[in-house]
Image 1 (cartoon, helix red, strand yellow):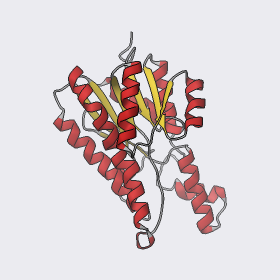
Image 2 (cartoon, helix red, strand yellow):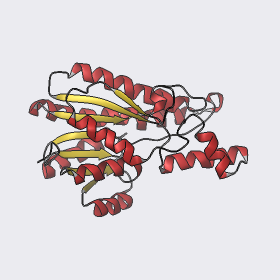
Image 3 (cartoon, helix red, strand yellow):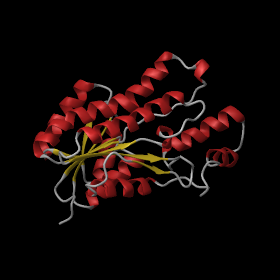
Length: 251
């Protein structure tokens, strides 16, 4: 039996990309996995492919989160591992950014982490065990032009991670963050599309611009992020860390 055997792991944003890769490796290692997201059709398809359960909720809605998490616990047992992966990235010069965009990015990327963590923390404290891994970003460690709202939210995730790690140290709960650079997911390819739209460059030129901060000259693969998440879940000594997966990018 591995550390993960029989443990209930819930992965937000689990229908694709990094979340789906994390769900797969947790399932392969013996965990009872629930993936959560807003798109029921996409979640059902991925859950069937991975042979895991799924739940539909918007992480920005506290009532939805509490209700869905309660159902997941009732059906599959206490949540031992929480992966806060749901996220949203948008770019806009600060001078042109509308308030709604700021509110939206903070709600999904930061308040969503708060809502989900708040829903599991009492149960984890009761069983004196829990692993929380927040998928932040190198934008939570560095500043980048034109993505001020995203950077602010991800910096908030890193700060929340470090604060909770200290608050719950010694309780059997660890809280860590993983900070990927550009990863081979729909989000990165949408960023390339935005560069093409704004500059008229070719896809190859746009991808080169996106990768100019990485000495490896390639996108990070979702499975590489998932491997780090799995390692953090196993290591009780790792707590309050924000680990960059960035291909050599200075952080």
